[in-house]
Length: 344
Image (cartoon, rainbow, N blue to C red; front, side):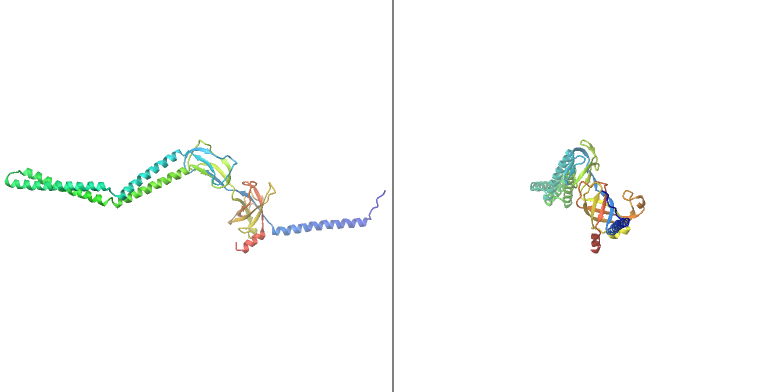
């Protein structure tokens, strides 16, 4: 059966109408997209996760390593330990030194014992008796010399004994006075200083012993295990490299023409090429200094443009964001306007 054909003029009108619809739709789509691009602001950057090299503050032999590369760690987790035997021995010696210094200081504060004072008093009494006897002997010999019953040599010897006994008495009296007065204030101050020095040495020994344990400063992931148990490590020698997971930063750049469309605190959405996950965050820092666009961010034509570096803090980061990964940042310009209105 033969299909009826349309008139040529009618076919021409249909083609014209269809072309107008297609062109109009394309134009409307382009206008809408252009209008939207005036409100949207897309920035490009990279994931900038902080990394830290973990090391002991003390030298020693590495006794144990608790984590391997790729392991997740939590803040405070013990990651490695040194052989702590030398530090325990130093701590014991420091404790003994402190006890000795404290005992000496207490002795200085309390002064002489009553028995020591009594002994000094008895020395004075003996010296007094000897002095009295020597004085009487000299007088007797001097009288005998006048009557010719004694010689000059005997008298001189009696005089020397009298003077020596008087000196011994003075020395015994001085010793008694010192025993009653106790120790000098300068000696007590020196004893107190020795106690303080011993306490400081003990604190240092305790700190050194604590430094024989290496703990994670924050939540993170081990990206490098540098040493192995049995190795001798110097102070500040890295044994682990840790990638910190909280917070996760993004490094991005904005042109001068768009600088007024962002503000610290502006909310953003983050996209990656590796997944459909949308992350959220906010702008935390905008550099006050202009710089040339890094080669890793833009095309060759834009590398000579001056831009401003900014940092985005991601609030819901997960394992999908890895160090150096390129990201696209969708800035909420309406929120930026609010931030500017608040005075940022």
